[in-house]
Structure formats: C-alpha cells, structure tokens
Image (cartoon, rainbow, N blue to C red; front, side, top):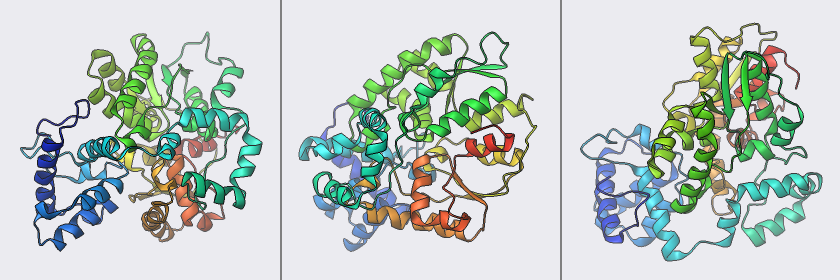
Length: 424
C-alpha cells in the first residue's frame, strides 16, 4: 500500500497522503456503500464536501476510523486490492490510523482492559458462578457502564467453571497408541477456553470420531483484539509466542485446526504480515478452520458419514472473518453432509470482540445485526448457526433465536457433533 506497513512506524505525512489517495478511489467506486458504518460515514461526508476529499476534517477522519471494527469485508469487495496498480488495502489503512490515533489521543484504560482476554477469561472462570450472576444483575451492569463504558444491555457469554484446557487434560488421550488417520494441534482460542467451551469439546469429539489425534499446545490470545488499538507490538508478541508453540507440532506432521474464525484468520493471513519468517509461513500454510479441515478429509474419503440424526433446517450466518479467508462455504457443506437443509445468511452480525460492548457503539452494532436477523426471519428454520460464538450471541440478542423456539445459536461443529449422536 504505497510503502505503508503495519510493522513500520507511522509517518503522519505519508499516511495523510495515502489516505486521501484511497478516499478518492473509494469516492469514485462506491462499491462498499452501506457495507459498514465507516463507509457510510466516509461517503456521506465526502458528499457534503461535493467530492473534495481534501476538505475532510480531523473529526471526519477520526469517526471513520473509530467506526471500523476490522470485519475486513471491504477487502474482499474491493476490486483494487493488491496486485492491482491502485494497491488499495482499506483495513490496513484503518489499523494504521488506529495506531496513529492511539499515539496522538492516548488509549483509554477501558480499551486496554477489554482486550486482556486471557486475564479476563482466567478470572471469570475462577469465579464463574459469582461472576455470571453479577453480569446478569441490572445494578452491576449500570455500574459497569458508568465506570468501564460497557453498555448495560450488552449480553456476554457466561464463563465456564471448568475451562476447556482443564476438560481436555482430565479426559486423557483416547487416540494414544492407535494409528490416527491424521494428527492435529488444536488452537482453541481464549473464547473457547473460558466461555464457549462446548465448541471446543464438540471439535475434539468430531475430530476423534473421524480418527484424528488431537493435541492441545500451549497458546495465548491470537492478538486479534489488539487491532482495535492498532497495537502492532502486541500482535507481534502474540504471533511469535503462538508460532513458537505450534511450529514444533507442524514440524512433526501435525496440522493446526481452529474452531474460531477470527483466530484462524490471524494464524493464516495476519501473522505472516507481522512476522515474516519461515516458521510463521509454515504454520500459516498448515492452519485450517475446523469445518474446512473436515471437508478436506471428506475430499480424501476420510470423513465418517454414519450420522444418526438429521439437524433439520439451519439458518447459517457466515462470519465476516470466515468470508475473508476465501475458502467457500465449508461449514454449509459439512452440515449438508450431516443431512441439514442450510440457508446461507451473508450478513454481518456487527459484534466484533470489544467494539459492540462499548456504550458508544452498542446501538450501532444492533442496527447492523438487524439486517442479519431480518434475513433469518425470511427463512424459517429449526436452528441458527454461526462459526463465531460472539456473532451467534449477537444474533440471539438481536432477536433471531425467538424464531427457533428460543434456542441459542450454535456453532456448525456442535450441529455436526449432535448429528453424529455423540454425547454432549
């Protein structure tokens, strides 16, 4: 992108020049109109100035950046991304601006606290019954809104008393001593480790059902939340730590499988741009979304097809970070292998890790989610699914679950696990 890179210091003059260049291209194209709040704001403000992007004020620039929650949909929509001569990477532009604004405006302690996912997860799980009860208390939520700026109506996933690593450790190694069809190093994610633990359990159950040996290496948060702050140093630290842990397994012939799409995106696409070495490249090349991996097994004739129960009709919302991976609709294909009738919903949920939790963005996130909910309502279903537990939570809060008997949204791997008849 004309010499700009996440791993280099931000040159304000060069960034300003590149920003106006990109905004002029966007103004002429407008393909991303109504794609997200940032583009709505950008194009509306440009129209106010009759197409003269040079008249955009600092407040205009800041609002465009603050409304970006790094869904990355614009990258796939854009006809001018590398290797095009325009070399346009709007998500990278936004991260560079976040990095610049963090230096110029400072970062609120609230924003730093909310991205400490591993710390929050450990504390939340250690105190799960009490913490979960507090998070449902209206008075506590008002205090959190006042002190932290976390919207009182923002639903959160409950913390699990038994973490996923604890469950994995106590169950032993069922595949040990056998001749596995494949071997997998599971990158479970902090979300699965402490909150959406059943997604991790279902992932292990389905993989082992298909003759896959699963190990759980040491790992930390993938670093995706740090994009909210443009904190390239934190992303680099996370990348190096996780690659150092995963690479020895990759070198032994293990594949890396990830059940959460933001984390698989980080390992596949973002890490090589932050840490440019051979180890990172090899880990990225061997990383797969869990449903992508199982469909790869099906292609090789290795997927078990002895499903016991048909899932019925599934309204499947494709998360933005999965769409950015350009792997097709592997989760849809897998659920259809299990006998489901799947309707694909290509609408953003508007959650993002911390963005929608903040008081200033929660109402906007609900407006975004309403589009996906309306699409679900048009296609009556037995289940609602999303590969992102946070997107599923957002759909539930926005009203979609009311149309499937109040059932919470599921991850596709949970639907497949249930179709196999495996115990929860």
